[in-house]
Amino acid sequence: MAKKRSGTDAVQHLGELIEDIKVAMMTTVEEDGALRSRPMWTHELHAFEGELWFFTRQHSHKVDELEHDHHVNLSYAEPKRDQYVSLSGRCSMVKDREKMEKLWTPALKAWFPEGLEDPELSLLRVRVEKAEYWDTPSSRMVQLAGFVKASVTGRPADPGDNEKLTFHEDGTTSAPH
Image (cartoon, rainbow, N blue to C red; front, side):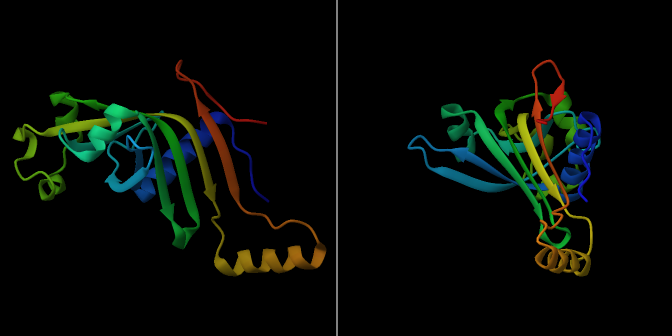
């Protein structure tokens, strides 16, 4: 049976899912209303409290799109473990050298060869407003047995954990009942 988590536990579990998956598809809105998505590596995951950080170039299509509309969606998926996360919020570009130094890893040189000295290097901060996750930790065989049982008994199958969260400006989190 799916378990309901308290607000704090749900936020912690959400952070753990994001940390395990790491790469999000970031969706922005073009001026004509079309949606565009691209993979983005998430940084500073050890203490998720409603903000996520990404490195980018100051002059890029996504930054142009964000100047038009700050709303983004971040989707994380790990199909092999049946774990999925969808986050929506507002994104802003941040030029903060101290924060960049804190988040920088040598692997980023592949995308930013000049490193922290790259004048185009910037951060994107997403302040999450809404989140939903699905987590089915059981094996495929256990899931299959659950679906068979549901078809025989006429009761719905247990889909695993599914939580919806709202992040408020005062730092609190709530979940619909």
